[in-house]
Every structure is written in structure tokens, then in C-alpha cells.
Image (tube, rainbow over all chains, first blue to last red; front, side, top):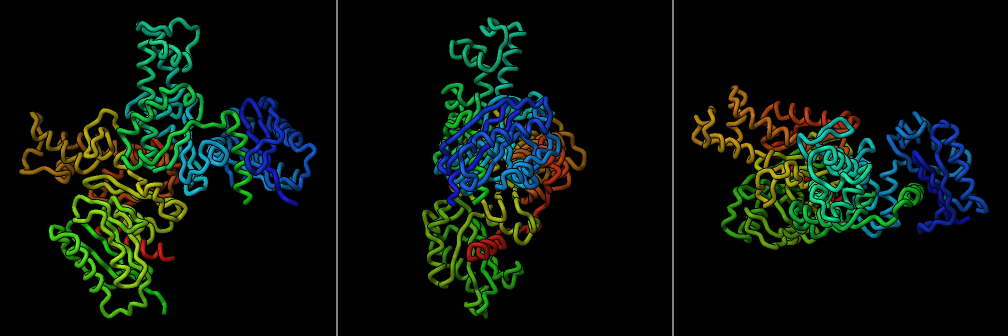
Amino acid sequence: MDKKYVVGVDLGGTKIYTALVDLDGNMINEITVKTEAHKGDKAVLEKLISTIDTVLEGIDINEVKAIGVGSPGPLDIKKGLIVYTPNLPFKNFNIVKPIKEKYNIPTYLDNDANAATLGEFMFGAGKGSTNMVYVTVSTGIGGGAIINGSLFRGSTANALEIGHTTVMKGGPRCGCGNTGCAEAVASGTAIMKRGREAVESKVETSLKDYDEVTAKEVFIEAEKGDKVSQDILNDALSYLGITIANIANSFDPDKIVMGGGVSQAGNIVFEKIDYEMERRCLKIIYDNCKIEKAVLGSKAGVLGAAALAILESK
Amino acid sequence: MDKKYVVGVDLGGTKIYTALVDLDGNMINEITVKTEAHKGDKAVLEKLISTIDTVLEGIDINEVKAIGVGSPGPLDIKKGLIVYTPNLPFKNFNIVKPIKEKYNIPTYLDNDANAATLGEFMFGAGKGSTNMVYVTVSTGIGGGAIINGSLFRGSTANALEIGHTTVMKGGPRCGCGNTGCAEAVASGTAIMKRGREAVESKVETSLKDYDEVTAKEVFIEAEKGDKVSQDILNDALSYLGITIANIANSFDPDKIVMGGGVSQAGNIVFEKIDYEMERRCLKIIYDNCKIEKAVLGSKAGVLGAAALAILESK
């Protein structure tokens, strides 16, 4: 029987988003449930399997080619293990085996950044590219790369740790323990921290009108003309531009796809990235490389897991 | 008849180094001649061809599989063109066609950094690796990468422009026009410039005992205990370490091979790189990635051109 579908599972700390997807990336059925991680590994696994059951209702299982699962890492994708992840109850837990055994369908695991990379490459802003880098900028900074049309994982499956490239020697401390990482100076968290530091300082800023400042408020007040917010954004986005320019000079991609909340925060983000890239990239690399906004939004993970299933089962 | 040999040509601004090489990387015949670039494109081409004639003397041409040429860039490798290069008389000059026509053997062109990358990968320090990055640090900083066992060129054949990744926002001006490039703060030229600035300043340093200071003298005097020379090296090598750590976090290679004069200048280079990598790389990437000295020395280019011939004619 013709294999017409795959199942994609976006396993997150707060919710599980599962969909039946055809080979062109169209969602046929979808369901989102709360993860309820506190209930433990078996309960979350059962819940995950129930979402697969739901999207498969009324479908002949013989038409389903493969199942893909995207999860936060670190993972051991060859063994199908979730090694450890702060927001999920799994420790060295084989997530692939029970799914594969239940449905008797090939099942694949990869981390959420790689899944989103594959999703944008196959069904989103990266369609048609050969060498693509996906960069996500939200609370953290992460990414993935397509090289010669295939997902590039690196030797330990940790390639594109963009957020922990150093762009400011002696800069602020990063969550990883190091200093001056891109994530420590250019992520949503970094913008939030600089905003809160301003609020707690003597400087005059309209950020002080808020009960709680996040990156969003810094973008809003910068747009309205608050000088302090503008300075914070200029600094952070300049370092973001340097981070992206370094990746472009290293990977020479034909497309860079920008996802995550900060990338969606306004034209200023893309203007600053373009400004730094034009100055810092080899001209031929700059001229050849398109920067585009990710288009799959909250569906990147689940469609990426579906893309993983399609590509790995080829 | 069994194809037992390839010809490698290392075309440089000062000399042409050509060798007949067997498929295991053993040099059978070799010759080095002066390029004499001032004599113009046709003269240099004739000279290049005469070196091939020389290494083929007494060899049955039917035993030669392919010819590889490594040249400074920018090149158009698909068309076989040397687009332009400061130290050679070629402008949009097809170097591949006349060689191919004369010998009726497949002939391939690639830039010198890629050739050296292939040379170290097939016959040198990179043997046995799957994902390897080659970094050369001499007057400039350049590199190349092997990904999943194949040379990675990027979309415009300019990948691994490591020397022009930004590691010091607002840092010194680079030859490329930008500021804060790795090459402007961590190359042999950068070390030389910092040394000469010290000589011209009021600071006390034994560098003032030399008629002319290059990077070499800074290494010598640092070793002898000159504080100023030590500071210069500490700064430059710290930025070199950051450059390499960023590449490791991006490419997650199993091996990084360090070539070029600065890489050979002493253990302090590798100690500083290791220090920065341990602090700045994801632990699993650091633990997995070996840093090794290039072993082919001045033969990297010619053996790399031979490796190119072997790989491309497969």
C-alpha cells in the first residue's frame, strides 16, 4: 500500500504537539496536550502515545511511513535515548523503542533545533536551498544546518551551537558558565537582563513604568523613542549580527532562516543583522546569502519532526 | 591499464611545486621552479606545463588518473578559472582547459586552502577523521573543512573564511577593510604589528634589540621572558583560541588540524588554544575533538592537489 503519511511529534516541557502530515507537509490531523512533566516518564510516554493514537484515528496504519519525534536534548539519537533534559522527566529514557514496538513503524528521534531546521528546509522558508542555516533567537540562541541538502549533525550531534560561540571576550556570564557567548549578549534573555539592569539603575528610562520588564518591553519602548531601550537593542542586535555574519563566513550558506521570538520582534532585527553582515562578510558570501524569517512559527517543531520521519525513512 | 598515479600542482606566487604521486600519497617525482609571475600568464602556464612534463618523464601516461591544481583564489572551480589573485598574472584565465587538452587527462582546480585541507585529510594529520577542520595560521588565517568525509566548499566555494570571523568588535582594522577579524588580531601579521607598535612606543622591551621585528622575534623574546612580548602573544593567542573554539562549537569536528608558521611556533600556541577551547566549547564537543599539528609542512599544497585529483576522479 502507498505510504502517504508520517506522524510528527513535538515533545516539549509544557506541551506535546502531534500531527499526521502528508509527504508535502500538509497537516491532516493534529492535537496538542499538556505534557504534565511532573507525572513522570511513564505517564508522559503514555500521553505521547495517546496523541499518536488520536491523529491516526480512521487512518489505515499501512499508509503511515514513519514517526518522527523532536525533543529537547541532549539525546542519543542513534539509540533513541533522551539522555537528560531540564524540563522533562526522562533520564536515559528510550523514547523510540516503545513507539516503534507499539505501531511497528520506523521511528526517529532528533533534537528540537534540528527538527525545526528540517521543518523550515522542507516545508518553510528554506525550501529550495542547498546549504541552509537555521538560527533561532528567543530565550536562548540555537541552530541547525543543512549541508548539500542533508541535515548536518556534526561528530557528536551538537553542531551549530551558535549560542555559545564567543562574540565578546570578557563579556557577561552565560548560563553555560562561560563569558561573552552570543546567548549572553544577544538573546531575548540578554535583552531582558540589560533592561532590568537599567530599571534598577539611576538612568532615566520609560522601562521603569512597567511592573516587569522582558525583552518585549525593551522592543516596545525602543520603538517609542526611549534612548536607553534603543541603546540596549543596538548593542544586543549588533552582537547578533556579528554572530550571524560569523556563521555566514564559516558555512557560506545560500540561505539563513531566522526563527524564535526575537527574530519576529520587528524590522530592526533584520536591519541590524544586514548592517553587520554587509560589513563583516566576504562580499561574495553576503551577495549570495538570503536572510529570511522562519514561516512555520509554532508548527516548526511538529512539521520538523514529520520532515525527520520523511527524510530518515527514505 | 591500471591507473597508479596522479599529478599534483601547487601553484603559488613565488614558486610552482609539482609532483607525481601514487594513490597512497607517496611522491614518485617532484620538481619546484620559480613562478616568475612578472613574465605574464602564458609564460607561467608554459612553465607549469613543463613541470608536469618533467614529473611524467619515463611514466606511461595511461597510468595517470588525473591532475589536480591548487591555486590562490578567488577561483571559479567549475569553469576551471583563476578569477583573480594578487600575486599571479591570471585574470579570468582558464588554467584547467589547456592542461586537460595537452594530456587528455581529467584535470581539477581548487584553492590552496581546500587543497591543503584535502592533503592533511588524506595523507596527513587528518587521516581517519570524518569531520575535520583545517586551520592555517601564518601571515593570514584560513581554513577548510571535511564534512562526512567530503570536502565542504559552501555555496560560493568560500566556506571556512575563518580569518574574517569577528572576534573583537571594534578591534584593529583588517586587510579586508573590516575591523576585529581573527586575522587582524591573531595572525602572524597581527603579532608582528603589535611587536612593531611596542618597538615604536615608550615601553621597555627586548624587541628593540632587533633591526626588524616579525612574529618570530615576538615568540623568541616571549620565550626568553620579555614581558611585552608575552603580553602580545597572550592576547593574540587568546583570540586565536576563541576563533578555534567558535569553529568547534559550529562544526563539531572530530579533529582540527593546525597548519601554517604560527601553528609551528611552539607549544604555547596549542596550550592557549586548549585553554580557550576547554572554557568555551560545549563539553561533549571539547572532549571529542582532537587538535593536531599539520604534518605535511611545505608539501601540504602539492599533496593536497594530488588528493584533489584522486577524490574528484573517483
